[in-house]
Amino acid sequence: MLPGMQKLTLHKVKIFDKMSEETIAFTADLHLDGKLIAYVKNSGHGGCNDFHFLQGVKLNEDSPVNSQSIDATVDQLLDEFIKAYDISKVIKSLERKSKKCILLVVEDELAKLKSGQVKSISYSEIKIPAIFLPNHFKAETFKNWFNKCEDLAKKKNQVIFNKEQYV
Image (cartoon, rainbow, N blue to C red; front, top):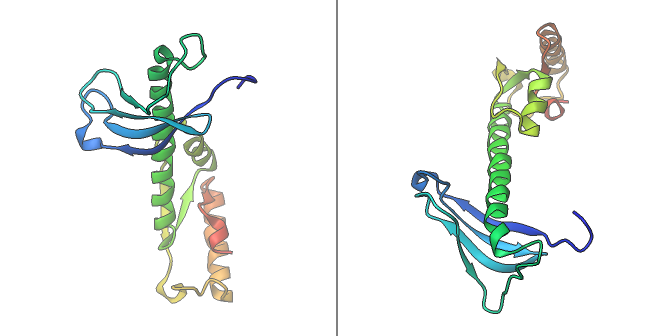
């Protein structure tokens, strides 16, 4: 961002998937340079976003942030939010699964997921034997078993997801 440029951000974003038809149904607070200037929403039936500016907020048409550019900017910010949210959901799902089993993933695929290039990744599961649950990860027998899992991952050109939680 260039010096003197104004920055728009969305806060308190709520997505309503079940209401979304032609566009994304959502509500959010719109901030300009960290200050709340408007409430924005879209009913999800197509069309532009609805803005409810706080009393006294005026947008200058000569400003980099003006009423003509603001709708497109909000759409872009919303797309970025949804992309990050989708990635977060997949990562959290993998983290939950990794508490019950070892997940083997292709490292490049995981990097692509985290960067938003893909929306999902494939993985293999190795069930953790019950004798190691819960919290027995420090036991020597677990370490030996875990090393075998690592060897298997290497043979498959994969890595262990969230490896640090086991070591």
